[in-house]
Amino acid sequence: MVTDPIADFLTRIRNAQMAGHRLVEIPASNLKKRMTEILYEQGYILKYKFEDDSKQGLIKIALKYDPQTKQAAIRSLERVSRPGLRQYAKPSEIKRVINGLGVAILSTSKGVLTDKQAKAQNVGGEVLCYIY
Image 1 (spheres, helix red, strand yellow):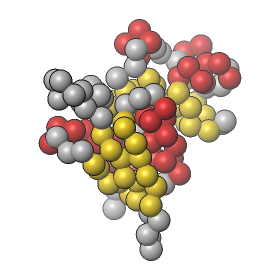
Image 2 (cartoon, rainbow, N blue to C red; image 1 turned 180 degrees about the vertical axis):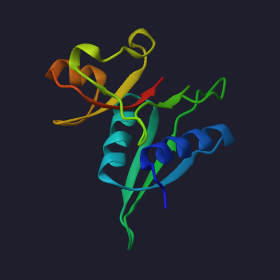
Image 3 (cartoon, rainbow, N blue to C red; image 1 turned 60 degrees about the vertical axis):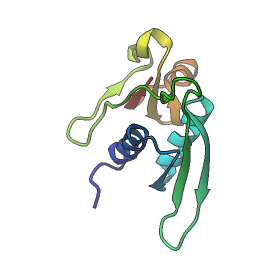
């Protein structure tokens, strides 16, 4: 049993990129599905597919690499809030990731949002991870 499913989600993507895989399969949950949609909207992954199986379902993610240098589009996936130490931020306290080049994913009362969306809607929440 996984005690931190978000860290498992990020680690599976990180390990697949380090191994040079094109596709990664992750057990699904509503939170992970929304995080996958955000990764796609921000241009960090090529495409994704949600599949239902007899259990909880799967998320299949096609990873994105630079055609010339073969470097992954995601440079870093950093877990911020953990089960042992939750990190919350008000709208004014949300930090910019690499001066606005990266993305912070937050779990707010209005759903899972990026840092820019949360500031625009003036909501704070739990800072799940930083991606750049």
